[in-house]
Amino acid sequence: MPWALKDPRLCLTLRFWLPLLSSGKSVSSNRESTLGGRGVAPAVLFTYRHPVEVAKSLQKREGFGIKRGLLLWLAYNEMVLSSTECFCFAIEHMGIILITMI
Image (tube, rainbow, N blue to C red; front, side, top):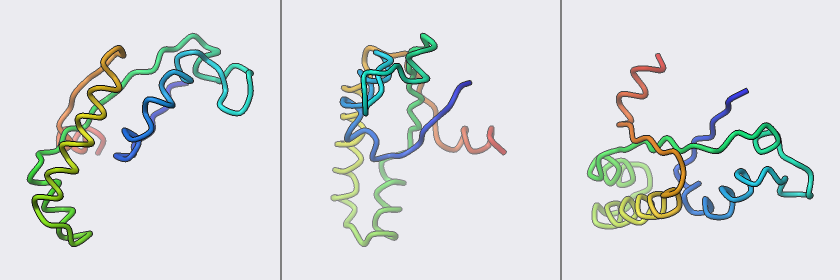
């Protein structure tokens, strides 16, 4: 059964999780995980938000300056792209996904 996980901060630990998902080994033991045990390779759906939208949201929610928000956007996006280059990868704009899911 397919499953998904959405968390913007996941890009910070993605390099740890992706090899475990690909190998089929559980984090807590040498048992095969559900995903790997079924021979299913992980795929990445990258939900893109415009950097200014993100910076303004962080400014409103967290009180961050626009410059700090833009730098965070850049750092997170670079981490995602460098961590997922060898996986099936799709890029989608956040607004389109939200419309499709309703």
